[in-house]
Length: 347
Ligand code: HEC
Ligand code: HEC
Ligand code: HEC
Ligand code: HEC
Ligand code: HEC
Ligand code: HEC
Ligand code: HEC
Ligand code: HEC
Image (cartoon, rainbow, N blue to C red; front, side):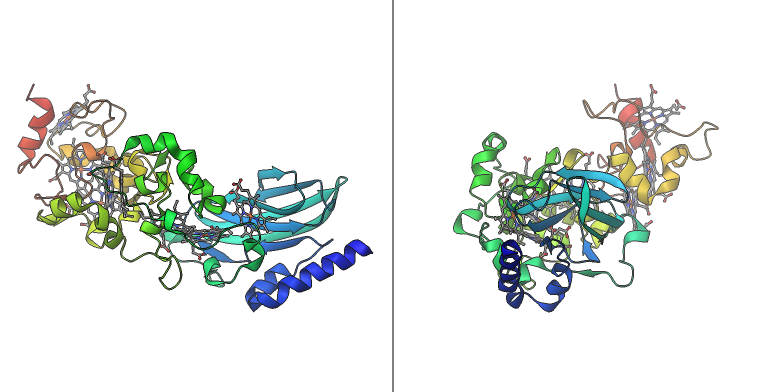
């Protein structure tokens, strides 16, 4: 009984300060267990969603989390608060949170999170009923007890692509310790290829604390990217043709601004990325045209003769960003013959 009163007091202390939509999701208290974040039906852009819950001492032995029926986490809760992040795939993710005590379910909650993706047309727009939820637009008092929510002076770390020091990676622990964002967003930098400013936790170089909504990023992406990548900006602006997605400034359609599984922080390997939008070109038939009765020119699975250590891919012949030739040929070549010669006759 005493425990129950404590929980009710704790809950009462929390409710008056949160927004109505938040109460709806938080008020699913079972055994005093409260899910604070996220609400149901939110839209996310990238591969993670943060979950935070409070569990009264001794109320639970394990928190099991499934996403679309696949187990993604099994957490033994410590006292009080439990915060963790769950990987999400493009489309609807049905997240099931089950809390067990002595082998019995004491709490069960399912939520849907939609991960938007510009790369897959069927996931470009969220289904009806899903919306963006701006966590940082609220006064998250419960979180403040343990986390620092305002960006500090030490979060501003100017990073220049030309003078970026790779050693920064070795000092990751030191640098992340100076970031207020790290304690909640640490998983955002955990994929193998980490973007420069993210490696040093300079989150506020793109996310402006004074913007509305808070921490939103200028659009289109190129506005943000070219702020640092001046060399590319000047280089590509001087070319006659730019690639469709680059023309409309959507750099982040191909590159993760944070971290990714592929070199150059790409969401997919170069070949998969290109074929994602140009499906019919994977065969390489377009390269040889009708003049050869072959299976088509190889476009992958061979070493690139011109780029040491790289695999042949669409980027072996095309520049993904800009070119002086309409088909976006690389190497500044002007005729198809010059292009072939680059690999076949030069050496
Ligand atoms: C009682 C203290 C406490 C409270 C209150 C608290 N947290 Fe945490 N949170 C922690 C601790 C401790 C960690 C682990 C930090 C670490 O490992 O660096 C953490 C980690 C996190 C993480 C990272 C999880 C991961 O592994 O990726 C997120 C996200 C998070 N908290 C969100 C929140 C939110 C949102 C709130 C408010 C609703 C909140 N926390 C309230 C203590 C707390
Ligand atoms: C208390 C933990 C916590 C801290 C500290 C924190 N965030 Fe967040 N942030 C969250 C949660 C929870 C979300 C909800 C989205 C999610 O699940 O990733 C979020 C969402 C965001 C979003 C998406 C827009 C929004 O408001 O939902 C941005 C951008 C962001 N955070 C940037 C930052 C930056 C930059 C910092 C450091 C200055 C920071 N965050 C510090 C917990 C935190
Ligand atoms: C190079 C610029 C850049 C940097 C640096 C950067 N971000 Fe982002 N971030 C973006 C862009 C672009 C978006 C997408 C915004 C949108 O479309 O709503 C984004 C979105 C987010 C979101 C929302 C995630 C979602 O799934 O909706 C979070 C959280 C976030 N960033 C956290 C961080 C944190 C923490 C850092 C520091 C480690 C950081 N970002 C550094 C550009 C950046
Ligand atoms: C705050 C400055 C800053 C901003 C803004 C920024 N970058 Fe970067 N970027 C860097 C730094 C620093 C590096 C690391 C350079 C290196 O590794 O030598 C980098 C590296 C990269 C690389 C990898 C280059 C390589 O050779 O591996 C890509 C791709 C990239 N950025 C794309 C983007 C995109 C897309 C955006 C916009 C969403 C963006 N950047 C915004 C600073 C920035
Ligand atoms: C269609 C997908 C796509 C888009 C859109 C795109 N990139 Fe890239 N980008 C790539 C690929 C693929 C590579 C690696 C090419 C290779 O293998 O050499 C790359 C490489 C890079 C590099 C490192 C190599 C270099 O050329 O300097 C930077 C920096 C970069 N991109 C920035 C940007 C910026 C900024 C934008 C937006 C203006 C952008 N990218 C838009 C696909 C894309
Ligand atoms: C997000 C979708 C998307 C991705 C990913 C993408 N492209 Fe494109 N691409 C377009 C659009 C849109 C156009 C412009 C419309 C058109 O001319 O077909 C275009 C045009 C082109 C053209 C010029 C077509 C012409 O008219 O000559 C080439 C070449 C090309 N892309 C190659 C690539 C390569 C190489 C990659 C991988 C690095 C790639 N694309 C990735 C959407 C994409
Ligand atoms: C060996 C060099 C080479 C490779 C590899 C290559 N291409 Fe091409 N690509 C060409 C040439 C040459 C043309 C011009 C063909 C023509 O004029 O008929 C072209 C034209 C294109 C065009 C524009 C013409 C059209 O029919 O729309 C697109 C889009 C394109 N390629 C995409 C790709 C993609 C995607 C890949 C990877 C799967 C790829 N290419 C791999 C050489 C290459
Ligand atoms: C970026 C380098 C590169 C460019 C540019 C290039 N090729 Fe190739 N080509 C290759 C590689 C690599 C192979 C595979 C060689 C092998 O398997 O040993 C190949 C193989 C071929 C083959 C044999 C195909 C088969 O079925 O095995 C022909 C024919 C060919 N190329 C013609 C061309 C023509 C025509 C052009 C210009 C339109 C061209 N190539 C441009 C790299 C290139």
